[in-house]
Image (tube, rainbow, N blue to C red; front, top):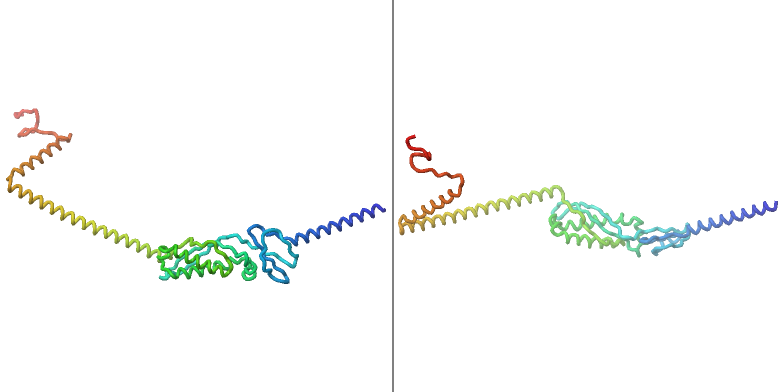
Length: 279
Protein backbone atom coordinates (compact mmCIF):
# COMPACT_ATOMS: atom_id res chain seq x y z
CA UNK A 1 0.00 0.00 0.00
CA UNK A 2 2.81 2.39 0.93
CA UNK A 3 4.81 1.48 -2.15
CA UNK A 4 1.80 2.24 -4.37
CA UNK A 5 1.43 5.70 -2.88
CA UNK A 6 5.14 6.37 -3.41
CA UNK A 7 4.86 5.30 -7.06
CA UNK A 8 1.81 7.49 -7.64
CA UNK A 9 3.52 10.43 -5.99
CA UNK A 10 6.65 9.89 -8.12
CA UNK A 11 4.67 9.74 -11.33
CA UNK A 12 2.72 12.85 -10.36
CA UNK A 13 5.89 14.77 -9.64
CA UNK A 14 7.41 13.53 -12.92
CA UNK A 15 4.35 14.65 -14.87
CA UNK A 16 4.47 18.05 -13.25
CA UNK A 17 8.16 18.39 -14.03
CA UNK A 18 7.61 17.33 -17.66
CA UNK A 19 4.73 19.77 -17.99
CA UNK A 20 6.84 22.54 -16.48
CA UNK A 21 9.73 21.78 -18.80
CA UNK A 22 7.40 21.69 -21.80
CA UNK A 23 5.83 24.98 -20.84
CA UNK A 24 9.26 26.52 -20.29
CA UNK A 25 10.52 25.21 -23.64
CA UNK A 26 7.43 26.54 -25.40
CA UNK A 27 7.81 29.93 -23.75
CA UNK A 28 11.52 30.02 -24.61
CA UNK A 29 10.86 29.06 -28.22
CA UNK A 30 8.17 31.74 -28.50
CA UNK A 31 10.62 34.27 -27.04
CA UNK A 32 13.31 33.67 -29.69
CA UNK A 33 13.48 34.54 -33.39
CA UNK A 34 16.30 34.28 -35.91
CA UNK A 35 17.38 36.74 -38.60
CA UNK A 36 19.28 34.92 -41.36
CA UNK A 37 22.13 36.27 -43.47
CA UNK A 38 21.09 38.93 -45.96
CA UNK A 39 18.04 39.83 -43.86
CA UNK A 40 17.02 42.46 -41.33
CA UNK A 41 14.07 42.55 -38.90
CA UNK A 42 11.63 45.22 -37.81
CA UNK A 43 9.93 44.67 -34.44
CA UNK A 44 6.28 45.58 -33.85
CA UNK A 45 5.19 46.21 -30.25
CA UNK A 46 1.49 46.17 -29.37
CA UNK A 47 1.91 49.14 -27.03
CA UNK A 48 4.64 51.21 -28.74
CA UNK A 49 3.96 50.33 -32.38
CA UNK A 50 6.85 49.84 -34.80
CA UNK A 51 10.14 50.17 -32.96
CA UNK A 52 12.42 52.62 -34.75
CA UNK A 53 15.41 50.27 -34.75
CA UNK A 54 16.58 47.83 -37.40
CA UNK A 55 17.59 44.45 -35.98
CA UNK A 56 20.56 42.70 -37.53
CA UNK A 57 21.42 39.06 -38.18
CA UNK A 58 21.40 36.43 -35.43
CA UNK A 59 19.03 35.10 -32.75
CA UNK A 60 17.16 37.66 -30.65
CA UNK A 61 14.67 37.76 -27.77
CA UNK A 62 11.16 39.19 -27.81
CA UNK A 63 8.16 39.28 -25.51
CA UNK A 64 5.64 36.67 -26.70
CA UNK A 65 2.26 38.00 -27.87
CA UNK A 66 3.38 41.55 -27.10
CA UNK A 67 6.01 41.78 -29.85
CA UNK A 68 6.19 40.39 -33.41
CA UNK A 69 9.15 40.48 -35.85
CA UNK A 70 8.87 41.22 -39.59
CA UNK A 71 11.75 40.03 -41.76
CA UNK A 72 13.07 42.03 -44.74
CA UNK A 73 15.34 40.69 -47.47
CA UNK A 74 18.01 43.36 -47.98
CA UNK A 75 19.89 41.61 -50.81
CA UNK A 76 19.88 43.14 -54.28
CA UNK A 77 16.99 41.80 -56.36
CA UNK A 78 16.21 42.23 -60.08
CA UNK A 79 12.97 43.73 -61.34
CA UNK A 80 11.85 43.95 -64.96
CA UNK A 81 8.91 45.91 -66.33
CA UNK A 82 7.81 47.19 -69.74
CA UNK A 83 6.37 50.49 -70.87
CA UNK A 84 4.80 51.85 -74.06
CA UNK A 85 5.89 55.48 -74.40
CA UNK A 86 5.40 58.23 -76.97
CA UNK A 87 8.38 60.00 -78.53
CA UNK A 88 8.76 63.66 -79.37
CA UNK A 89 7.64 63.02 -82.96
CA UNK A 90 4.54 61.10 -81.75
CA UNK A 91 5.83 57.57 -82.40
CA UNK A 92 5.04 54.75 -79.96
CA UNK A 93 8.02 52.85 -78.55
CA UNK A 94 8.08 49.63 -76.50
CA UNK A 95 10.74 49.70 -73.78
CA UNK A 96 11.79 47.09 -71.23
CA UNK A 97 13.69 48.25 -68.15
CA UNK A 98 15.68 46.10 -65.73
CA UNK A 99 16.67 47.45 -62.31
CA UNK A 100 18.61 45.99 -59.38
CA UNK A 101 17.16 47.30 -56.12
CA UNK A 102 17.49 46.92 -52.37
CA UNK A 103 16.02 48.79 -49.40
CA UNK A 104 17.81 51.42 -47.35
CA UNK A 105 18.56 49.38 -44.22
CA UNK A 106 18.49 52.34 -41.85
CA UNK A 107 14.98 53.28 -43.08
CA UNK A 108 13.37 49.84 -42.83
CA UNK A 109 10.98 50.82 -39.97
CA UNK A 110 9.72 53.76 -42.07
CA UNK A 111 9.37 51.54 -45.15
CA UNK A 112 7.38 48.99 -43.12
CA UNK A 113 5.08 51.66 -41.73
CA UNK A 114 4.29 53.31 -45.08
CA UNK A 115 4.80 50.64 -47.77
CA UNK A 116 4.91 47.22 -46.08
CA UNK A 117 6.98 44.18 -46.96
CA UNK A 118 6.17 44.34 -50.71
CA UNK A 119 7.51 47.87 -51.04
CA UNK A 120 9.38 47.22 -54.31
CA UNK A 121 6.36 45.79 -56.14
CA UNK A 122 4.32 48.82 -55.10
CA UNK A 123 6.85 51.50 -56.02
CA UNK A 124 9.22 50.42 -58.81
CA UNK A 125 6.72 49.73 -61.66
CA UNK A 126 4.95 53.06 -61.18
CA UNK A 127 8.05 55.26 -60.93
CA UNK A 128 9.73 53.26 -63.71
CA UNK A 129 6.89 53.96 -66.14
CA UNK A 130 6.79 57.58 -65.06
CA UNK A 131 10.50 58.12 -65.68
CA UNK A 132 10.52 56.24 -69.00
CA UNK A 133 7.63 58.28 -70.39
CA UNK A 134 9.20 61.56 -69.24
CA UNK A 135 12.62 60.78 -70.77
CA UNK A 136 11.39 59.23 -74.04
CA UNK A 137 9.16 62.25 -74.70
CA UNK A 138 12.32 64.40 -74.99
CA UNK A 139 13.68 62.54 -78.05
CA UNK A 140 12.60 61.67 -81.57
CA UNK A 141 12.18 58.01 -82.46
CA UNK A 142 15.44 57.75 -84.39
CA UNK A 143 17.38 59.50 -81.60
CA UNK A 144 16.55 56.67 -79.21
CA UNK A 145 18.93 54.52 -81.30
CA UNK A 146 21.58 57.07 -82.26
CA UNK A 147 21.74 58.54 -78.74
CA UNK A 148 20.96 55.42 -76.71
CA UNK A 149 23.81 55.88 -74.17
CA UNK A 150 22.56 59.39 -73.41
CA UNK A 151 18.97 58.15 -73.07
CA UNK A 152 20.06 55.34 -70.73
CA UNK A 153 22.05 57.79 -68.59
CA UNK A 154 19.03 60.10 -68.24
CA UNK A 155 16.75 57.20 -67.30
CA UNK A 156 19.26 55.90 -64.76
CA UNK A 157 19.83 59.30 -63.15
CA UNK A 158 16.13 60.16 -62.96
CA UNK A 159 15.06 56.74 -61.66
CA UNK A 160 17.75 56.60 -58.97
CA UNK A 161 16.73 60.04 -57.76
CA UNK A 162 13.05 59.12 -57.81
CA UNK A 163 13.58 55.83 -55.93
CA UNK A 164 15.58 57.60 -53.24
CA UNK A 165 12.38 59.43 -52.24
CA UNK A 166 10.97 56.03 -51.24
CA UNK A 167 14.15 54.90 -49.43
CA UNK A 168 15.01 52.41 -52.19
CA UNK A 169 18.58 52.06 -53.44
CA UNK A 170 19.10 51.17 -57.12
CA UNK A 171 22.43 49.52 -57.89
CA UNK A 172 21.89 49.35 -61.64
CA UNK A 173 19.38 50.52 -64.26
CA UNK A 174 19.47 49.30 -67.87
CA UNK A 175 17.25 49.40 -70.97
CA UNK A 176 17.23 45.80 -72.16
CA UNK A 177 14.77 46.03 -75.06
CA UNK A 178 13.61 48.73 -77.45
CA UNK A 179 11.20 48.26 -80.35
CA UNK A 180 9.03 50.53 -82.47
CA UNK A 181 5.43 50.32 -83.57
CA UNK A 182 4.36 48.61 -86.79
CA UNK A 183 3.81 51.86 -88.71
CA UNK A 184 7.20 53.29 -87.81
CA UNK A 185 8.97 50.01 -88.64
CA UNK A 186 7.23 50.00 -92.04
CA UNK A 187 8.25 53.61 -92.65
CA UNK A 188 11.87 52.82 -91.77
CA UNK A 189 11.83 49.86 -94.14
CA UNK A 190 10.40 51.98 -96.95
CA UNK A 191 13.01 54.64 -96.31
CA UNK A 192 15.79 52.06 -96.53
CA UNK A 193 14.37 50.73 -99.80
CA UNK A 194 14.17 54.26 -101.20
CA UNK A 195 17.77 54.92 -100.18
CA UNK A 196 18.91 51.72 -101.87
CA UNK A 197 17.02 52.65 -105.04
CA UNK A 198 18.58 56.12 -104.98
CA UNK A 199 22.06 54.60 -104.59
CA UNK A 200 21.35 52.19 -107.46
CA UNK A 201 20.14 55.04 -109.71
CA UNK A 202 23.21 57.05 -108.78
CA UNK A 203 25.43 54.12 -109.75
CA UNK A 204 23.63 53.72 -113.09
CA UNK A 205 24.10 57.44 -113.84
CA UNK A 206 27.78 57.26 -112.91
CA UNK A 207 28.23 54.16 -115.07
CA UNK A 208 26.57 55.82 -118.06
CA UNK A 209 28.72 58.91 -117.57
CA UNK A 210 31.89 56.80 -117.46
CA UNK A 211 30.84 54.90 -120.60
CA UNK A 212 30.15 58.21 -122.35
CA UNK A 213 33.58 59.53 -121.40
CA UNK A 214 35.21 56.28 -122.48
CA UNK A 215 33.43 56.49 -125.87
CA UNK A 216 34.60 60.08 -126.32
CA UNK A 217 38.19 59.17 -125.44
CA UNK A 218 38.04 56.16 -127.76
CA UNK A 219 36.69 58.30 -130.63
CA UNK A 220 39.32 60.94 -130.02
CA UNK A 221 42.02 58.25 -130.04
CA UNK A 222 40.74 56.75 -133.29
CA UNK A 223 40.52 60.20 -134.88
CA UNK A 224 44.05 60.99 -133.81
CA UNK A 225 45.27 57.62 -135.09
CA UNK A 226 43.54 58.16 -138.43
CA UNK A 227 45.06 61.65 -138.66
CA UNK A 228 48.54 60.29 -137.95
CA UNK A 229 48.11 57.51 -140.54
CA UNK A 230 46.87 60.04 -143.09
CA UNK A 231 49.89 62.25 -142.45
CA UNK A 232 52.26 59.29 -142.69
CA UNK A 233 50.64 58.11 -145.94
CA UNK A 234 50.86 61.53 -147.46
CA UNK A 235 54.55 61.74 -146.60
CA UNK A 236 55.73 58.14 -147.27
CA UNK A 237 53.20 56.99 -149.88
CA UNK A 238 51.45 53.58 -149.80
CA UNK A 239 54.48 51.83 -148.35
CA UNK A 240 53.19 52.21 -144.77
CA UNK A 241 49.88 50.57 -145.68
CA UNK A 242 51.68 47.68 -147.40
CA UNK A 243 53.89 47.26 -144.34
CA UNK A 244 50.85 47.11 -142.05
CA UNK A 245 49.23 44.57 -144.40
CA UNK A 246 52.33 42.34 -144.33
CA UNK A 247 52.48 42.52 -140.52
CA UNK A 248 48.79 41.59 -140.26
CA UNK A 249 49.28 38.65 -142.68
CA UNK A 250 52.23 37.44 -140.61
CA UNK A 251 50.17 37.51 -137.41
CA UNK A 252 47.30 35.62 -139.08
CA UNK A 253 49.68 32.97 -140.46
CA UNK A 254 51.31 32.52 -137.04
CA UNK A 255 47.91 32.08 -135.40
CA UNK A 256 46.72 29.53 -137.98
CA UNK A 257 49.98 27.58 -137.71
CA UNK A 258 49.35 26.98 -134.01
CA UNK A 259 45.84 25.59 -134.62
CA UNK A 260 45.65 21.77 -135.17
CA UNK A 261 42.34 22.01 -137.04
CA UNK A 262 43.69 23.97 -140.03
CA UNK A 263 44.55 22.15 -143.29
CA UNK A 264 46.39 23.73 -146.22
CA UNK A 265 45.19 23.05 -149.81
CA UNK A 266 47.20 23.68 -152.99
CA UNK A 267 46.20 26.51 -155.25
CA UNK A 268 44.75 26.10 -158.73
CA UNK A 269 41.56 24.50 -160.10
CA UNK A 270 42.21 21.00 -158.76
CA UNK A 271 41.09 20.81 -155.09
CA UNK A 272 42.12 17.16 -154.52
CA UNK A 273 45.66 16.24 -153.69
CA UNK A 274 47.55 13.38 -155.48
CA UNK A 275 44.96 13.19 -158.33
CA UNK A 276 45.70 13.88 -161.96
CA UNK A 277 43.83 16.46 -163.95
CA UNK A 278 42.48 13.81 -166.45
CA UNK A 279 40.32 12.17 -163.83
